[in-house]
Length: 181
Image (cartoon, rainbow, N blue to C red; front, side, top):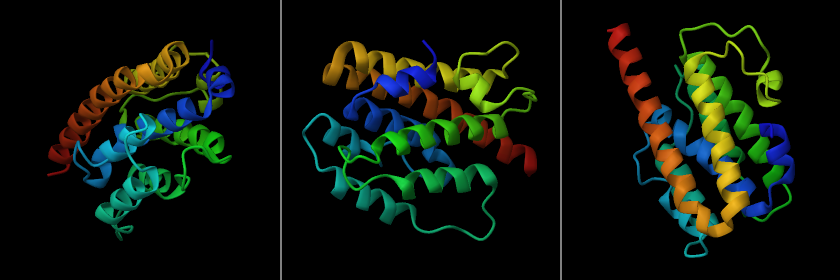
C-alpha cells in the first residue's frame, strides 16, 4: 500500500503520530534534543497533554532565524502548523503536509538527485530514489502500518522508528556542517 493510501486510511491517533514522527525526525535541524517531543508522544498514549507539550516545544525552539536554510524552514513550519489538539479535524492535513515536508527535507539533504516528483514517490514509485529520502519514505510507511496494525500499542514502535531516523538525520546535519567548515 502506498503512503498516500495509508494516510487516507489512518485514524486520528495514527495521523497525529505520523505527523509527529516526521517532525521528530527533523527536530535536529532546529537544534532540538531527543526529549523535546516526548510530551507529545505521551499525549498520544493518553498519558500527557498535547497542547501543553506543543507549547513547550514551540517555546524551546524559538522563532525563525535570519539565515535558516530551506530544510530548517520546512521543519519549523511543521512545528508551527501542528494542530492545537491531536483529534482536531486538521490533523489529517497536518500529517499529510508533514509527510511531504519531511520527504522534501530528506531530498534536500541527500546529495543524490531525484528526478521523480514527491507525489510519485508517495504513491509508490520508488525506483531510483536517493537513499536518504527512500529511508524516510520507508519510515513513514512503517509508522502508519504499525499504528494501523496495533493501535495505541504501536506507539512505542513508531517512536523507535522516529528515534532511528532522528539519529540518521542528526549525523547527516553534522557531516554537512563539518563540510562547510
